[in-house]
Length: 345
Ligand SMILES: [Mg+2]
Image (tube, rainbow, N blue to C red):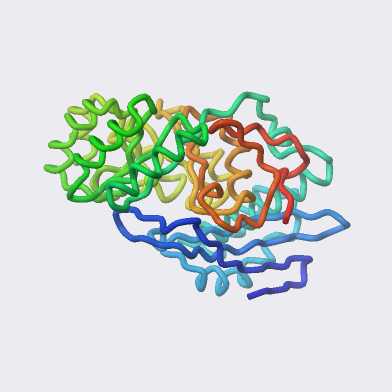
């Protein structure tokens, strides 16, 4: 569906498709509605993407319902603090991917109007981005072996393996056999019980796993703190982090945090979360949803500040509507073109 508002804003929702069904502990999905917002003012465009995720209470339908209510928050694209305040006042809870799309559009409009890539406008250093992991999603064992083999053949050196099944031990054993030298990270997507996670710690260490994302339920801070005390593998919060204000309390239970623009409400909110995480000695991952190269590029602009990157969301798509992001053997180059640096195909 397409929409228009009076302030030079338009939006369009596209169904993006993964090249193969994408399975995690909670669900398997192939179709992802993504809404592209465009601010067109004074001959300059700024674009943003809403990548809703049902875990955070959003769907394609909620995005389309809420967007018209928030559009006029973007009256002055240079007033970033005012935008944040207006979005929070109008919609105090939830809808982070819609807020992200509007924040992305404002920030890109400003960067493009002065001819700079966004990271330059933000005053960030021209640093190389951390190597990104590539996801092996949950499927039968031969298929997971194939995904790993093809990713490594394609130049990826870090795999993030989705776990949270009854056969996690067998998956790790099979992948270690298939791709013995690759760096492995795992993501349980909140699916393990405390007892199951404790039993798996030794398996993770034996498989030389570099980090484990969200082993336990999102609200189980005590469980994560106990697990961290026993674990030789760093424990990273993803589903436990919904909002910038969560970061401080995560520091007592986790070693690191996975920042995603679509769940935090945009690049400026992610930057706030990142600064707080650093003050509390958390290791930081820049992550993503399944989203187009527009959303991935926005995350890439901040990834130079992070220790880990997991930015393969658009690589998993069969129909990425944007081009311009440069990948080299599993590494994303820092975007150099003005704005977010990507072009609609
Ligand atoms: Mg995760």
